[in-house]
Length: 400
Image 1 (cartoon, rainbow, N blue to C red):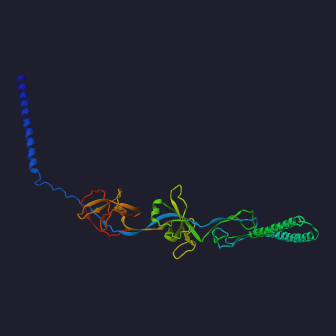
Image 2 (cartoon, one colour; image 1 turned 180 degrees about the vertical axis):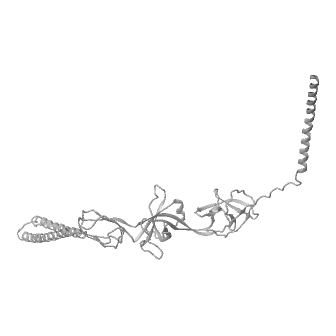
Image 3 (spheres, rainbow, N blue to C red; image 1 turned 60 degrees about the horizontal axis):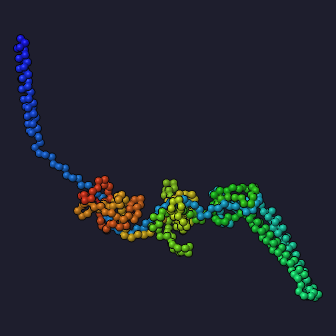
């Protein structure tokens, strides 16, 4: 029995070893046949390359006035402390002597009690009268001494005998008395504190009835006939300004300037003029400050508000004129100072150019372009020289 069971197991093993390779072979043949029969009849065509569309402008030479942009704070032409030159009690105060008050030149802004100075004036006048009497007496003494010496004396008389020293002393005392009188009149006039110019009051420190020592500050005032603005200019921007050269006698014309600031949601403009430059560059910034002036800043014109002191303003200074330059949008220039051109075969060309100035919304090209050339102004992330492009929406030749 055991021999028969062993023979059956050997027969099964031989059957499996024979059948398994045949099954694997048949499966592989079937899969190959299916792949061949089910393959597509034609292969897909390769996708056509995408030609990018670009916008262009035509380069045209222009004559441009290259204005210079700056900024500054409005300040009065003159701002001073009004000082009491004599001491005393304040009797009167001008109604305009308040913060923001307007006054005219030579207005009496403050009156100091003048009685002490009136007394000094009377005393000085009395001293003059006495000095004149003494001088008249000494002159008579000199005449009498000269007459007596001529009648009785011998030889040359001394100055003392002729009363000449006494006469000189009397003359000197009269001059001193006259100087005291002039000083008394000056002190009396200083009791009236007058405005040295037309302007406004920034702040005041005194009131009526207050006693002021000599040298006390009465108020801080400023002139309102002209406002000034210090405008910093970089050294590279000076090339675009036609500034007068030479000494103070130069009569060359300084450039105009337009100031503007937003007030109450509206952009306000004030015309002015550059009148001078400071004598040296600023040590901290290396910039040169130009001084602009605006006349009658407190007067409001139609649609324009007064130009207030302390206001921060932007300034556009009239610049020099440059011929045969090209103005392009900033997108026309890459970081390597190159422009992209489209040639007659609709292919891109990269060209190095010389940039004269870069502004907020445009770039000024000095050289490197020819009139009529097509300059790409659209953004292109992938850019290869010689690639074919399609021009869309051609723009006008001149750009802002």
